[in-house]
Image (cartoon, rainbow, N blue to C red; front, side, top):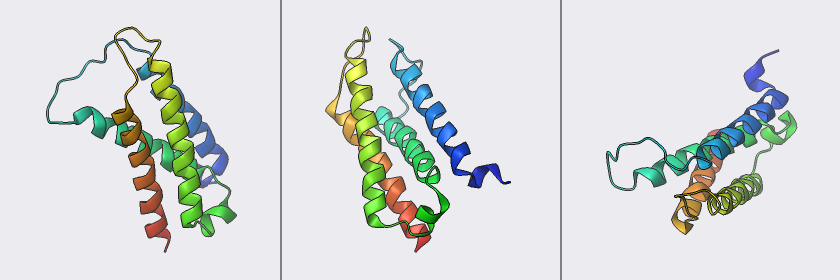
Length: 122
């Protein structure tokens, strides 16, 4: 059995990745150096894009073979919902706040990966 093709393995990876995002969101200060403009938005898009990838791969194989724009929108919605819960969570973390810009970046990352996967499948 190939683990990377096993939807159950990818579900576990999605849960672990969600936990990692939650862990980072729980920190009052994240060690980082500003290297370029909007760096944090890029990080949000990448992290939630990875989450979208794990969500996509956690679908059963028959769904992956018939992956459609509708599936991409559902994955995007799930990623956006987790992003919204993450932003809400940050309200209660000292020195952190909720940001609409972060939510847009989270959703954009999930949408981009979902669409790229759709293009790859066609």
